[in-house]
Length: 185
Image (cartoon, rainbow, N blue to C red):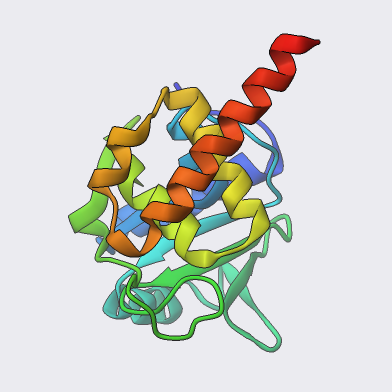
């Protein structure tokens, strides 16, 4: 099973997803756990969850502060009271990256998730779009690796929102440059 890691991040992941399911709060997994579900594993120190505004309200009513503590100055950042692992909540309708309005907003979890080990994970197209819309170097690097591990090509760009297509092509070209470099070694 994919999500059965024994480290503290996986334990927090297991607890929060179980609690969200039990509370019937719609959610989808994003961030590094979603990357891993789409064949690219990298280290992470937190758990990222996509919720609707209503789901976020329910999360706060039912699970905060008993299971999850608030982080001062961060409205959507919490910590697991068991092990202090961070949890970032992304909310439908808000915007990736700086949070300033743009062409891509966080979608409803039910519209973009697929089940992996019985857990809803954002689909590959949405994950790539959100990573590119965030406009952080770390996210661009993640897209390069998603391209590599999912054997994506130019045709995948047509599935993406037009606002991120050129960034996707740039990531694809970077992946190819890296492949050429590795081939020369």
